[in-house]
Length: 630
Image (cartoon, rainbow, N blue to C red; front, side):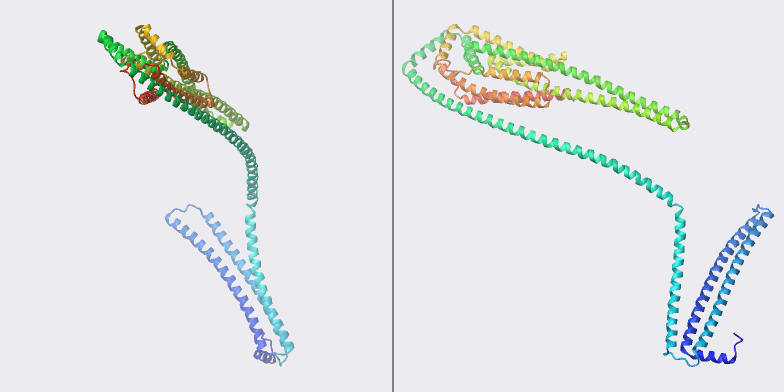
């Protein structure tokens, strides 16, 4: 630069005054400033690195100084010298590196200066003295300057992008080390997920098939239930229509018979009042004077007993009464036998349940002992199992699993067996409850019969028999059903004895008079009422004595309810017929002091008494079951 002549300096001064040249110089200055800024930044970075190294060395020297001052330094002189030598070597390397970088920057700057001088010489040669901005050369220069600026901008952008990609490449190289393990883990997870998906698809298919089968079964059961309901409703409607028709027929017959009886009663009353009221009164007074008061009282009691017997048995023939009582005795014997069988079955089922419970407890105790023993053995042989191979461990685990599986199967079998026995026991208890209810109904009917036959003495006797039988059953430990059956038999024997006494007291003339009065009766007599009721009870007992399942038990309940309802209806209707028979068969002058004026009231009283006895018997049975099964 110092070798330039004065003329060249003038040319340069002229060029400096030119705005285009000033602009180009400004661009060159900007490029120089950028390069200088980059050099300064590199120097700052180098200084920072040097500063960090010096700080590290300073801290190490401080630590060494503190250790030396406290007497805690244990290294020898050779190690210290080696360390100092390493530090000096590192410093020398850093200085060489910085020197190399400075030399490189110097070479770049000299090359840039030479290039700039060449460009300036080219510009001076090509520009000339007079330079016009609007000329073609000026426009070309401006376009070149613009292109140069754009190229510089693009160059800077490319450098920035290059640095960005270099950083990305470094990061990717760092991440590439763990990529293989992550890929293997993801592949393994994917395989497990696919396996789980196949298992879930299989389970879903099984569940769908089970769901379809369940839906089909539900549809089938619904259709079957609908058919059964339709059949049941049809049966109920037919029975209702039949019962309604029978009721209407009975009402019409009873109305006609009542009208006939009223007309006959009016005719007989007119005839009797017109002809012989005075003679009958005289004959009654003479007979009463001839008899003693004790005989009169006994006759009064016999008449009352006779009337009650007719009302209860619903027949005026003595042979029929005895036959019906014998049928009742046979029914009671059958009931007693059925109750004994049910009690024996109950005791057997209870014994079997106790045995199964004992076996269950024993199996549980054995399973607990086996588990404790296996745990103890596992603790003792833990070290041995660790030394064994994987095959041996697998075989031992399989053996333990097989033993556990065998135990579980045995437990499941015992549980199923115990559940079956429990179900059988519940069914037997239900049958026993039904038999007990039936026995209570029979007991109430027999008690009412005994009270009607034997008057006040029989009620006291039956109550004493019931108390004695319950006390004896409690003392002997017998079944209350058996004791109740024996009490019923005792009451029936007492009633039959009382009837025999009544028949022995009655004379043949009185029996003949009653037979003639019954022979004059033109209406139908109901004889099969008690037979129907006893047949219903016998069928109920026969059904309950056998083993029934759930559907048979439901049919048994329905049959028993229908039997009870039909028997009650027949009893009520038979009492109506008995009232009419007694009203027509008894003459006007026979038992005038015992004539009942309100038959409906007597009927309602008897029905209320029977219902009260039934409720009382049900309460006693419930209390007894609560006491037996607390």
